[in-house]
Every structure is written in structure tokens, then in C-alpha cells.
Length: 391
Image 1 (tube, one colour):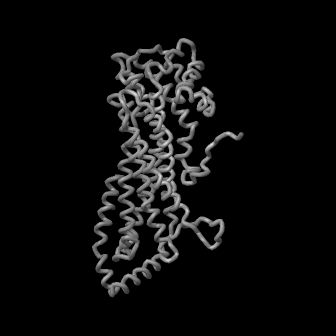
Image 2: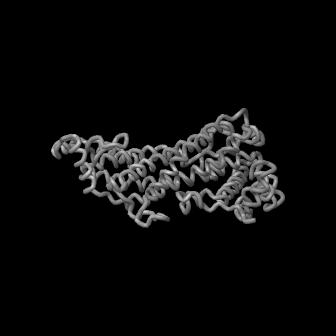
């Protein structure tokens, strides 16, 4: 029987992206080891553990752990931290071994690891959205007066401009960037078995701060074992990111229909049975990602209802949906920022379609020009906001 390896065959939107590489099993495993090493550093810094514990922290990164074996060994205990700890303890001197995982619980290590992974992905998402926003700002400026038919309920409505439509795209990206920035430095977790860090005593806050500093993350005010605000916040940021990218893609799908002909992807995708087609594949993939994100976010939302000090099942239900969301949103942001600059806008087709609208309304081109004369003020508002978002 072949090994059950997921190489992205059914998720082309994230296959080969930075987000995919940052969220693989090896990346999650490395983040767990980073968390355990940072705990050794924090314990030594707070004076709870001897200096030798801090000195040994660096050696944990060299421990060879097979992710598949760890996954299989995780089944009896229900999470991969339990079988990881003895492997790490066996790799350090005896006087240090007792300090590996000292005072922590499995949830602390896995939550911290997933926050490290998520922070890495969200920083990449912010970078991709920044590139995307820069292109859109240029498009707004260059196409602010380019006539275009606005459509409502799929039908021709009134004259507008390509710059106005692009300004709507840009405003959505601004929204996403603002939310994403709240998630690029996420909290560590170090509550111990029931949330009050009993093993650390009064030095708990000092250990927590040292732990967060060692990882470059944020120290929470108190345990979030059953206060899942960081995870729900992530779900929101990832969903908004997908929606911002997919709004652009959905518009391009309509604009790119043969009968409309207002836009086309720089290099369309092939059809397996119709050689004449050039499918808007990248737009399709981005839309597919955005359609999955809200359902996955709902799993994280209901998992936030967690009983007492440690949840049973709710926490476990978060892991895979969160990772999938990171991949989908990360893939959508990367692909949109990459393919949009190659989209070709056909201004002749836009004029032709506007002519159909004017005929239906019994109006002339001068009327259309008057209708869109004020549109630039709204484009300028979005461009002003762009300067505020990106300085």
C-alpha cells in the first residue's frame, strides 16, 4: 500500500504556493519543536531551570522526527505532542530532560505551533495583498475615466468606468489588509494543564513573557485554552482575504465571457476536450478557494464554544480546517497578485457594450459622458485610503 501523501492534487489553487510550503506537516512539526525549544529558553531566563536548559534549547532543532510515524503514534493520546515529547527528552542531557515540556500541556505546544505557522502565512498574505493593491491603485488611476457598463443582477444597468470597478476591488483589498495585520503577530499559549500555569507559580507571567519573546510572538493576558478568539480572528482574516481576491476573479469571469469580451487572462487554461477554449483558470481557482473558506470558518466558529478549562473535541476539530484555510487564502492571495497584472482589458469591447446599453435606453454618448463625469471623485477617495493603508 502506498503512503497516504497529500501533494495538492485536488487543490491546485494552493499547489506550489508559499502558503502550501509553510503549512505542511514538516512545517507544523518544526513549529512544535521551536515551541519546546523556546520553553527551555524561557525557563532558564526566568530562573526556574538551570542555565544548561537554555543552552540545550538549540539542540532540539537537530532532532530527527518522522512526521508520518509521529502521526501514527499520536492516535492513542489524540495529539502529536504527546509522542513528540519523549523523543525530544531523549535528545538532551539527563539533567535537562526533565525541563523539556516542563509546565506545559499538549495544547500549549500545538496551539503555539499553529500560531507560528499562521503568523508566517499571514505575513506572506499581507505581502501578496500589498503587491495586488499596488497594481490596482495604478489601474484605478489609468482607467478612472475609461467607460464601462455597470451590471446589476447580471444585466446591463448604467454607465460607469473601469476605474470605478477597480476602485471597488482595491477597497476590498484594503479591508483584507487591515484585518490580516491584526493576525501577523499571534499569541503563544502557556497555560499548563488547567490554564493557570501551576508549575511556574508566581513566576508564570515572567515565563510566559520570555516564551513569547523567544518566539517573536505576543504574550496573552491569560490562557486562551477555551477562549478561542485568536482562532476565530484568523478565520475572519482568511475569509475576508479570500472574498477580496474572489470579488476580482468573479468580475473577471463575467467580463471574460465570449459574448462580453471585456477582459481575458494573459494565458488561458486549456480544455481537455475543446481545443478552441482558453479558460479563465486562475480566476476559477481563486473563486473556488473563496467558496470553501466560509464553511471552514464555521467549524472554527462553533469550536469556539469550549467547556470549562480544556475542551473535548472542539479544540481537535480546529486543526485541519485552520490549516486548509491558511492554504486556500494564501493560495488565493498569491495567485491573484500574480495573474491580475497579465489580464488584458479590451476597451473596444467595453465601448461596444456601452453602445448596446445606450441603444436600449435611447441615449447618446454625450449623456453617458455626463453620467460618469463625477465618478473620479470616488476613485480618488479609494486612492486616498490606499495612501493611508500603505503610507
